[in-house]
Length: 326
Image (cartoon, rainbow, N blue to C red):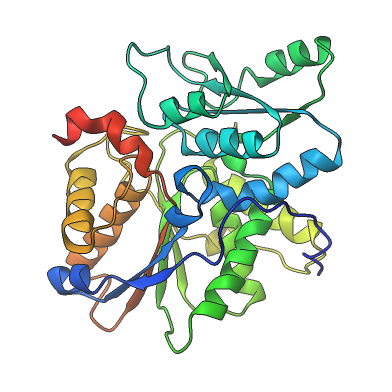
């Protein structure tokens, strides 16, 4: 196994903090709750995609590409961090965003524009379905484009979360986590954490909270994650075969679907802000935290547990949801 063989470019500030949420733990009368603050990676107000982009954009530079293409929802955290990384590396950036151009620009979309990205509105195609068309157009213009996959979720992106588990292990002296809970959406973070857990012999239960009802491809999401775990293991020469029945993906909290904020998300945002002074985002981390809160209230997480919540970032999108949150 050789992860160090793969190049990285420096985009963020690591290690990110590991903190205890003692007030929230007390309020819920449940387990000790800790948080890995990947909302503080530093790039464009932070987020977990910064880790992935360090590997992915290093590959783009190695290939001599000068233009980056990626896709997401109108308030995509991934697109915001990709736009910032491209600006830092002096690369042209094209974002394919689902929906139509809004009358008022705010949240992540405002930041996309500040970073100088070129935005293409794609209607119902928020997961990159139109990328081949834009790719061909850019090639015809004499540019050398590079596609960053949806959510940064390919083998290179997954590698970054093997590193993240190593980072956690170095930070964490004396605490044996029983569970690690996080938002699972495009699969790269989930796959990397699975491999990191295997490589660094961690014993915690790894629980992804499913964020989206729609899969990112023709395959079921569970199968996408499984395939990405195994293709990443093969890429780094790791003799490991992950089986679908090992996957812990909780789909009980998808609510109204992707980007639809409901009472569970509002409560999670409010409780985390009021008790810890930490902001969650409406789409990903609030939904994942609502899952953690419910697991405590239902007795599935007890006072004997030590739970780590992996904060994957996204707070800028709060401003785009101001009306719903008010």
